[in-house]
Structures are given as C-alpha cells and as structure tokens.
Length: 94
Image 1: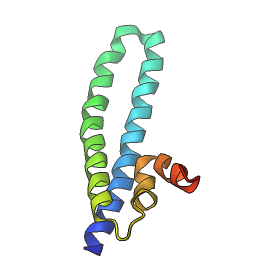
Image 2: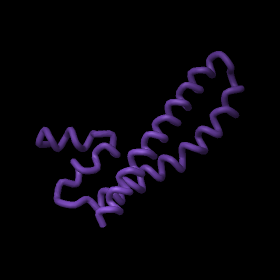
Image 3: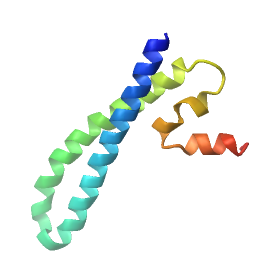
C-alpha cells in the first residue's frame, strides 16, 4: 500500500510538472500568434494533444494519491499535486 501511495505521488508530481510545462508552451505560442497569425494554430495542436493525457494522468494520480494517503490529513499529504492550494488553506484553519 505504501509503495502504491509513493508511486502515485511521484507520478502526480511528474505529470503535473509536464502538464504545466506544456501549458506554458501553449500560452507562449498564443502570444506568438500576434506576429505569426493563423500559422500558430498548427503548432498549438500537438501541444494541446500532448497536454490532454498529461493533465488526465496528473488528475488520476492525484485521486489515487488522495485515496491511498496514510492517516487523516489528506489535504496536506497530496497538496503538491494540487498546486498547494489545499495545503495553504488547511494550515490557516479554513
């Protein structure tokens, strides 16, 4: 059980990083569309197609991490996968 938790946690961190990197590339291409016009759309399609599975893997591994977390502090254990938003709200007592 512990190995599955750690593995899902690592997959969540890695896939979340890849999804964020691809989203940043997509936004950079969007900014480039001011100069290149509609030529950017074919360049954005592969990035969007790669981002979909990376984001799905990130969300799926977060759900698995959340389900397998040892102890009662679910939000604090998997918060890095969730962008830290749940961690900061639990520390403040909200």
